[in-house]
Image 1 (cartoon, one colour):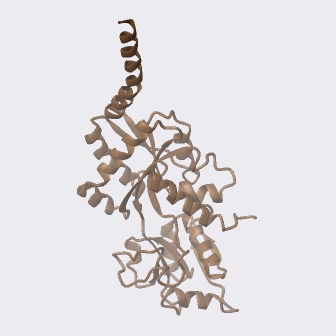
Image 2 (cartoon, rainbow, N blue to C red):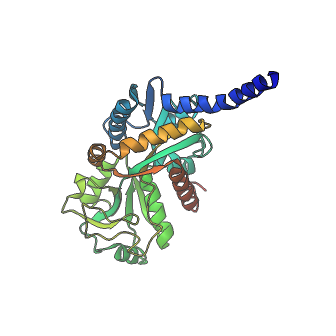
Amino acid sequence: MRNHYRLLLLMAVAILPITNIAHAATSFPDSPVRIVVPTSPGGASDTSARILAEGLQTLWKQPVIVENKTGASGTIGARFVAKSPADGHTLFFGTGSTHVVAPLMLADTPYDPERDFTPLAIVGYAPFVLFVRSGLPVSNLRELVEYARKPDSELSFGTTGPATIYEIAARLLEHEAHIHFNHIPYKGLAPMAMDVAAGRVDIGVGPVDGYLKNDRLKVLAALGNQRVAAFPGVPTSTESGYPGFSVPAWAALWGPAALPANISSALTQGLLNVLGQPEVQKRIAVTGIVIQPGDGNALRMLIEHDLTKLKQLEKPGN
């Protein structure tokens, strides 16, 4: 009889961790969750995060709050989440800028984009296009490269400052095509695009938006492998012979490093559930982000790919 009770006790002890894990997975989250956004209110990331928060709040029956922590190319918000408790209640809505561009272009990034986070889900990508002033005598990306290779060519490329996706775009094209541009830094996309339209700058890169509907601009290529719906007749950079000319223009969610597997799984499932809802997809599409959900493993591979590709570029000042 004593052996029988001992066997029952051992069985109970063995089952207890499994029961606790199952309970944690089904009861998570059991308190409010916050999503940290590293940009100002009103932008694509902030708006998309708030749409996701609404869906998650309905799904989880817990408050989901969006908190903006801006500055330093998004690294302030990213660092905050990296240093937060690994309990799944603080998430980060980041982009290729925070997890690829800044870590490679800034010497003092206060986090490691791979070691300091748990990848949870890809939200989607933001189509970027390359455009030029209307008076430039080129009609596609190949012709632009040929023009830039002329001995007397001194084409200017507008960017939005160092450690930004716009500078990465200029440097990637230089690397891919073995050409050189005069980089003209701006403090934002709008003034840069206005100067390209006015003919003061030759080339620019930016997301698909209303400013491109301008007869003083010519859109030459969609960056990456997919054409954009707004310009269906414009070929991709891959079609134009430059498959490496694409910027890490995507959005995703992370938690701090060392999230327990059951919690990260519950977070990923919840995020993919909400991202799969047609109404959520429709609302986020308005921000310019094209929904293409992926799980944590897909996000991990995406970061590895982009970091490897962009490490070929020298950091400014090297």
